[in-house]
Image (cartoon, rainbow, N blue to C red; front, side, top):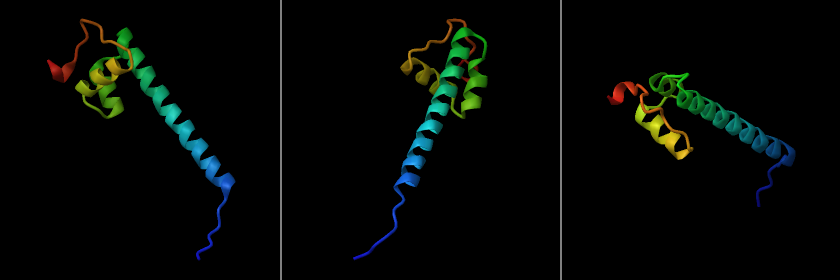
Length: 78
């Protein structure tokens, strides 16, 4: 039988911090989507900021309920 130490509070704190970090990242992505939708940020710049392609940005925005302006310059897609 193997006995190991288990610090429940450290485990719980780690899980909470992971959740906070994930929330911050999701908030950042939603802010970028919002800026692209409003036309304040170009899709190509947003995609570079997120480290994804413009096609992935467009897909992610659509899944999250955002839309690109009809005249948005999609850079590499055109």
